[in-house]
Length: 189
Image 1 (cartoon, rainbow, N blue to C red):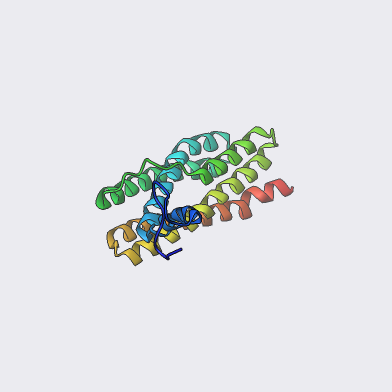
Image 2 (image 1 turned 120 degrees about the vertical axis):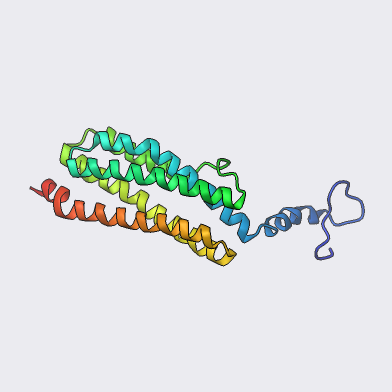
């Protein structure tokens, strides 16, 4: 077996075990650019899923502050979708080819909270928990995208993605504040 030589097509004079290494070679040909694009597409899918989920969460919230927070984040999320579209346009990347399965799962967890038939204050606490899971995922995703954009020399993309990262961090802080100073206290009494 010669390193770098892989059997493709008709097998005659090479080791048949080399056929198993063709896939490994193709996988190693993937670049940081490929990973960045894949995760950019995931971010776009995640944000578009959230534009559908946040109105449901706002409707299910009984705390006026939580309802307002979900509505405000919906506005921010629509802006984040536009930023991602700008990044995609600048880089010549089609954003609609991936489905973010992680966000599908997180949205399903939020829907599960709504369907449990919980007491209103307890449901609000559950909605905050579900929303914070989303925020933590997005913070991780955008943190990676910012780092990779910097590494790849995409300064404009990095700036746009960093704006979204900061919004996600602020939303998480607002949710923590609301939980600790209002909703969780109401549940405890």
